[in-house]
Structure formats: structure tokens, C-alpha cells
Amino acid sequence: MRMICTWLPILLLASPASAQPPDAGKYSEEKFAVKASRGHKVKMRDGVALSVDLYRPDADGTFPAILYHTPYNNNLAGWTNRAKWFAKRGYVVAISDCRGRFDSDGEWDPFDRKHKTDGYDLVEWAAKEPWCTGKVGMVGPSYMGWTQWWTATQAPPSLKAIVPEVAPPDHFANAPYQHGVLTGWLMDWGATMAGRTAQIVGEGGYGGFTPTRAADFMKLPYVKLNERRGAMDSPWFETWITKNLSTDDYWKGIAYQTKEAYSKVSVPSLAITGWFDANYPGSPMNYLGVKKYGATPEARRPSLVIGPWQHSFNKRKVGEADFGPTAVIDWDGYACRWFDHYLKGIENGVAKDPPVHVFVMGANRWRAETDWPLPQTQWVKYYLHSKGKANTLDGDGTLSTVPPKAEPADSYTYNPAKPTLAPFTGGHLEDGPVDTRKTSAGLDVLVYYTPPLSEDVEIVGPIEAKLFATTSAKDTDWMVRLIDVAPDGRAGLLCDGVIRARCRDPQNGGIFNSEKLSTIEPEKAYEYTIRFWRGTGNVFKKGHRIRVEVSSSYFPYYLRNLNTGADNVGLETEFVVAKQKIHHDAERPSHIVLPVIPVK
Image (cartoon, rainbow, N blue to C red; front, top):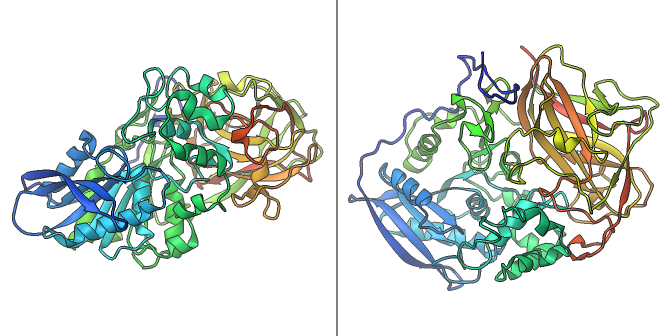
């Protein structure tokens, strides 16, 4: 065992020989030269023409097609180089600009419901071209994960497989809202996506990832954010901020994570994400959705890969953390083997592969599993305890599997003018297991620790917290974080969960409900079930401690709740200071539920 990270000892290289990553195995060899043709105009059902570039094997005959449908310019080197890689292996790759972007006609709106039918029309166009066998797959990361799922829910008959990479979920589970809270990174994305082409917003940065980011987000109202940044050509941005219930027709039109939508998906899916991916929730949520409701046996047997990565996945290092050589896999080969089976009909065993592969940090090894969450998971409750002084790293908060009895509540003040700061170097959760000590030292953060562990504790899966909380305001936010603390005190952030108080469902344990706003009575305790938007896979090593933090802001990753109780915080220009209490007693046992994997 050797240290591969100089600053965070939880990341050790200890990969057993039996622990194997997803195996690309044998896939189509490179055998063709490639010819490209650009600017094909393909008409959609409403008459709008989209621009498509083609990369084809330079040979006679027909080939299966792979479609990228992107808002990011279909001529980017990253897309074209990958397209040529697949074309050399016997695929025609079509890369299309979304409507209203770059060379495509029409008006651009990131959540226009027409993206669904555009995907259908592009698939069927490709299938009918003389160079195509009639079988089409889709691939691509991030927004292109959206375009794949949107298309799949329309069930185009020629679509045979999708490979959505770091795909986001629906709009209230991650972007632009995360359980009622506006995410800062999506505000940045919205700025750079203004207009037809890529925009540079702020001082030298993409989409506002600049030194002015936090200052931009402190100005009110939020609805004027793009205007203040100079991103003028984005009429849909105001819609995002003002239409903040899923019952609104704008959001209902583009939603895809519903029983009705999943029941129309007939194709197999191979999804990949990372523990630190900003769009993490989409992949496991889609795995569970199509497994339960998919229209065919192939759709109901999805595949899921989760590595120790950020949004730019399949890398060995994330921030300052090095996860070792096994963290990098032959992903294009794996995807090609997938397409070989479903588009070319090659019997290569891909349908018999383990459906789930997850990377376990701390041990730095892969697990090949039969399902998600892992079937052997033991759901263990860790309860919050204190004598009423859990504030800061030096408080008296503890964490144990023993339920509380008579204990005083912990209190703190949340002032939107002075929000709790996140420790991310880029203001982003993409920085890996960053050290949280500096930003956890304030009185506005409650901290709960286990004693040093007497043995390793492995957790892999989704995380949930239950808070019983009181606020003096008419609305507020609750945020919970899970952290691995090394013997030298260094604290690696693993994952977190958030909920806007008014978005809880009082009839269902306080879980998030995007379809209605509840009322909050100041000074009354309510139950909140916080499903973390990211899960994790991590071994808390012997001698380490498990830590849980609670606060009401984590800025600038999340925009602040102004605590006014207004139906639309995006229009508010004033704020209210909130006095917060977290209860942990016999009647109100606040706790976190960890997915513990038993030692064999």
C-alpha cells in the first residue's frame, strides 16, 4: 500500500487483483479511412432545418449510425475526433447542432420541448439515408445525455441503443433547481448559453466561472443575473427563475423522469457518471427508472458505471486527489463494444456483463455488481448528538448509531448577507474531496463526528438524512454534508444534500415535492427528508472519522435563500435573517442513513 495523494490520506492505492474495472474486451478494429461532409440541412417536422455534419467510412455499403445532438457546436475537435474514431470502426457518425444553435435554424431555448421531437426526426432521417443499415444509436456527454433521454422517451423505431454520459436529471433534481434551491453552476451555464454561439461572460471565464462569480450572485434580484452579466440574448432565463414549479407547462413539456416517459423507452442504455460529477443524479435515477418502467426487457436491463470522476469523466486525478491507474478505463472501447452488439448484432457477451460497476474510493478499486443500490447494502442510521453546542469544528457534536434521548437542540444564525462559504477553488463541487476545515469553522455550521473508527467502514450508494428543524423565518434552506476526516484532521468532502423548507411534502415525511409549496410556520419544528443529490463510494479507513455538517447555505455553489417566504425567491430584493435549530432527541431523532457494505 502506498500513498498516492500527499494531502488527503483517505485516498490510498490498494487495488486487489480480483477487483476489475469495466472491461472493454474485444470491439471493432480500425479498418476504414474516413470521409467528412458538413452542413447537411435536415428539416424537422415543423419545417426548421438543423445542421448535421457526417463522418463516414470511406467505403461502399451501409453502416449503422451514431448520433450526437449538441448545443455546443458540432464542429468542436472533441466531437469530431471521437466521430472519426468510431467511423474508422464501421459507423457513420452524425453530429447535429440543436435548433437555434450555431448552423441550425430556429430559436434556442435549452428546455424547449421540441428538442424531444427533433431527436426523433434526426434518428429517423439517419435511418433512411442510403448509407445507413437502418439502425441508429446515440452517444454524448452532459446536455447530450439529455438529448438522448428526451429522444428515447419518444420511441423512434430506428433507435436501438443509447450511451448517455454524465447526463443530468430533470430540472428540479439538479439543474437549474436542486430540490428547490438554484444551483450557481447552472446560472453560469445559462450565461454562456445565451444566444446562438458560445459566449464569454465575465472577466476571462466561461459562463461566469470567474473571480466575480460570488459578487455576481450576491446582487438581487436573481432574475436580472444574465442581464447584469451582459448575456442579453436569453429570454428563457427569466422563465427559469419565474416558473419554479414542475406543474408549470414549461417544465412539464421537457420532463422525462416520469413513469409515463420511462414506459416508452424501448432501448438499452449504458450510462456513466462520477462521484463528483455536477450532473451525478441523472445516471442512477435513470437506471432505476427504466429498470422499473422500461418498455422492453432490454430497456429494463440498463447498465451503470460510476467512477471517481468529475463532469469531465474518466480521469485519474480530480483536483488534488489521485485515485490511481485503475480509475481510467477504456471507455470508448467499452461503448464501441456496446454498439457492436446492439447496432451490428455481434454476439460479444455485452448483454451478460455485470450491469453495475462502481469505484470505491479509499480502497481505490472497482466493484462489479448485479444492481443499484448494491443488494448487500445495510442501511445504517447515524444519529446527531450534542449538549447544544455543536457549532464549529471545536463544538461538542457527535455522531453514533445510538438513538438520542433527552438532548438540547443545536442553534445557529443564517444571515443571507454573510452566507456559509463553500471551499471549492472554482466555486464548484467538481474539485473532488476538498478539505472543508476552513469553511466549517464558523458558528453558522453544525459539526458532528464519530470517534476514530476501530475498523474500516465501506459505504457505497445513495445517502439520505432526516432533520427535525425549526426556523424563525417563513422559509429557509437545509444543507447536510458527509465528510471523511483523516487522523491529521484533513477533511475530504464526499457528497451533500439540500432541500428548500417550503418544498417539503408534509404528507410524505418531509421529502422534496416539486409540485407544490408548503407553508412554514416560524418557530415550529418540521420533519425534512433530504435525499443527497450525489451518492458516494468510499472506505472510511481505520482511525478516520465520519463527519456530518449542517448549514443553511453553501455559497456560491448554491444561490442563497433570502428567507422571506415569497413564492418566487428569484424576484426578491430583500432578505430576512433566520434563527435555526436542529433537534436531536427521542421524539425528533435527526440522523443520516449510510449505505454500509458488510465486510465478507
